[in-house]
Length: 323
Image 1 (cartoon, rainbow, N blue to C red):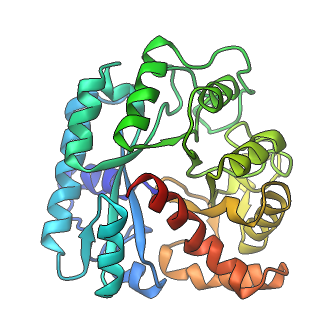
Image 2 (image 1 turned 90 degrees about the vertical axis):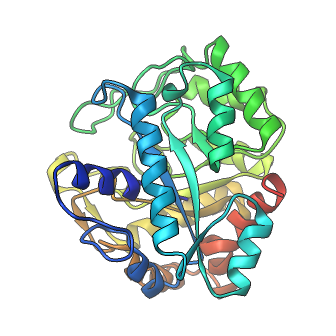
């Protein structure tokens, strides 16, 4: 449900390094996706508001990287914007790509800009990243990715509520990863459709504020949404020394068991956050996804339950919202 590969490709190209989607040194490329038996990858247009002089222009450049990557590799991957597109790709044994936005601040609070990104193919968006923006407040983290604590007082702003309504009208999936605790409950109270946390884990097992509380997990499950497991060490491991956190498939499976015990078997999917994470990773690229399959079996999940986690639960939400 989430990766930052397109941003990494743009960054490398800006440095004069050749980099494409078919084969690269990143955590996600098309050859590795085939190796990992992928069907669909959500490709985020991630913009760091503090690093870009013109965030909207940067987002449009990222959209161009995505679109050109789809065109250059149309023999392997198809861009999809609705559930019927995804079913067509699966029928032809093609990989599928979906464009998402990570950082609602690039919209400048203007629903007209959201509509333009919808026309370009965006079908999911996080309302915030790690900074306050025109739409609302995140759960803040430091430059070292350490948690600064949950924000239970500041949620969505007036423009955020307006954007939320337009997202539901258009059929853009609301993604609450990075959003403040108060913002989560604002989304819950002001939406009717399922929403997602595309790359978040369980806060009870790892107390980073990018993770979800028990009540949030239950509420997403009750709404029919999904949570994408994040493979980042700092969102899995409670080691207080940040540089020594590790990501193992056993830890990921432990979060999977905790989340499904609370929210039900249909609440869980895969988020990864590939090309946005680093550190000691047992699964250091998407081709190693079968490792997680084995870890989930070891955790006691059935093959049918794992199939739901790997694709069935997310596809159910996409069928409902993107049809």
